[in-house]
Image 1 (spheres, rainbow, N blue to C red):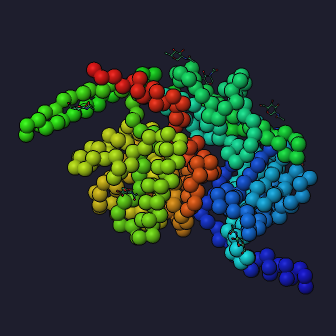
Image 2: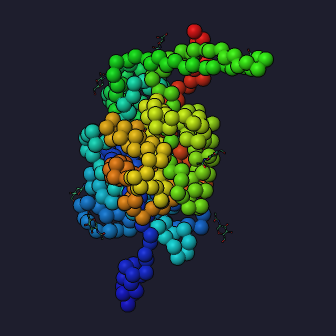
Image 3: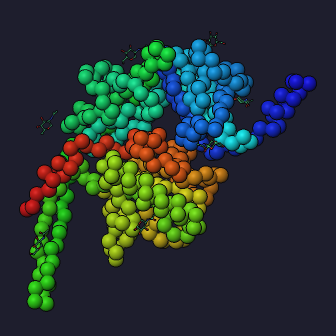
Length: 409
Ligand SMILES: *[C@@H]1O[C@H](CO)[C@@H](O)[C@H](O)[C@H]1NC(C)=O
Ligand SMILES: *[C@@H]1O[C@H](CO)[C@@H](O)[C@H](O)[C@H]1NC(C)=O
Ligand SMILES: *[C@@H]1O[C@H](CO)[C@@H](O)[C@H](O)[C@H]1NC(C)=O
Ligand SMILES: *[C@@H]1O[C@H](CO)[C@@H](O)[C@H](O)[C@H]1NC(C)=O
Ligand SMILES: *[C@@H]1O[C@H](CO)[C@@H](O)[C@H](O)[C@H]1NC(C)=O
Ligand SMILES: *[C@@H]1O[C@H](CO)[C@@H](O)[C@H](O)[C@H]1NC(C)=O
Ligand SMILES: *[C@@H]1O[C@H](CO)[C@@H](O)[C@H](O)[C@H]1NC(C)=O
Ligand SMILES: *[C@@H]1O[C@H](CO)[C@@H](O)[C@H](O)[C@H]1NC(C)=O
């Protein structure tokens, strides 16, 4: 009887929603893993929540529940799973079942692949840039730990900062950068590492950029203009990111969510807090400017594209609205020039991505978007750290450099 009841409970009564979020993690044997629930709310909202973790190991192909016993090599504590001293047999699918209400639950899946030796599969996004000022550590987003950096697998002495600063980037800066994070669990030290390849594109030439400023005043009914030319030395880019989002034909709720996100969190965190420079339509374009030309130029002048996905993003290909156009230009650039430059942010839940343009669906098949839900407005939240990780590194003396670089001719 007991067995039958349990059987029904397990297979019939529990219907957790499975949001379309899948994460794949590549890790190294011998290291340890601190794995928070891959969804931010699930990870953070531990109050009034309960959790169960399951695994379906590749070797057994059976779903089994994981225990909470701290002495076990594999155990969980609320929304965090610990796998200590990873071995190849830990490869498989890990499922977090999150009860956020008494009778409501979500399930999130993380596919884990353990590698015995270093392999290029372990590499996080490649950074391909003309100029960089640093590299963010891809691991230890949610933990306290001390950091050591390696370049091409040799220790970089006395570098414990995140991001790792690269003062004068050049062709010699290329290579594989590994960040090793050492953290403690019950007094025992564990390591988690993440590696990323840096490529310096093209010959190292700083761009020359001329800006014409007109200063006009009206004297006795006559307009007199003075011209100033500014010379700016840069890597050829003016913006850290160009933000693409749908601006028309949205229902009221989506429109509000979007505008709260773009005008709120996005600006506060990326611009005010982290110091990135964004190009945002409606704010940075001048009225009456030739829209199509402007879009192409501005996208080319941006180091990243941030594409914000909303449930109703338009598929209307016949439309030549600026927003459809910037998406088209942006996607073309991203697909032709490689995907390193695109950051996908999804606002709220979506059943699937079939309503999106094909190019975007292609990008989505390779990179899962970062999911944003209301309330993740702290710069130290996991969501913003992940966005920051995909952004170029803000140079620490950027303001000073800018003013030095601008000279009146
Ligand atoms: C948890 O539940 C209690 C009682 O229902 C409620 O007062 C409290 O606000 C809840 N906390 C959160 C974070 O939802
Ligand atoms: C476990 O994973 C395998 C694939 O690795 C799958 O075929 C199988 O159905 C899964 N088992 C359960 C009970 O979901
Ligand atoms: C992994 O599984 C294989 C086969 O079940 C077993 O022989 C081996 O000892 C396991 N390795 C570890 C490190 O547990
Ligand atoms: C970086 O380059 C500048 C000018 O080319 C030079 O003065 C400075 O010493 C260099 N810094 C490092 C750390 O190489
Ligand atoms: C690191 O390795 C890359 C190739 O992966 C090579 O181009 C680069 O010169 C190496 N850098 C150093 C400092 O050895
Ligand atoms: C952990 O990383 C540190 C720093 O890179 C290293 O000195 C130490 O040997 C590593 N420990 C293990 C168990 O790999
Ligand atoms: C523009 O011209 C006016 C009048 O000549 C002058 O007072 C002002 O400082 C100028 N502004 C800039 C930015 O040069
Ligand atoms: C942000 O605010 C500006 C001015 O307040 C407005 O014109 C713009 O449409 C807003 N952007 C979004 C996405 O709502």
